[in-house]
Image (cartoon, rainbow, N blue to C red; front, side, top):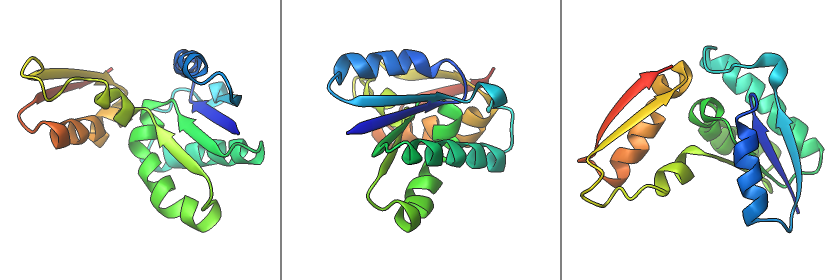
Length: 148
């Protein structure tokens, strides 16, 4: 199986490196959209359009699975791609983001994590995706977000 990893810039290379460590048996295609970086200050429509173009590119490279290693793309475009685009165009392929696994790596049910700070792009923070997902796990956790 071939897995595609996408980021709007270079930060996704760190995620890509860790994925390869954990899953070395797969073939990979990495796509960094350095020509249009950064995504975070762009409109949601533009982020969706650019992300969709990148996902299509990776599917055309025979990737069965794509990981959005970009917080802006994960927070703005992922659900729409999963719910609207994939069922109509690539029902047998999957796209996942980095936000839910990041949140799952935290021990949010522990009493130690009463306050979580999130810094991110304007698009990531204004989507409130992190905050919503954290609150699903522990509604008592206070989340402070700041765009950078």
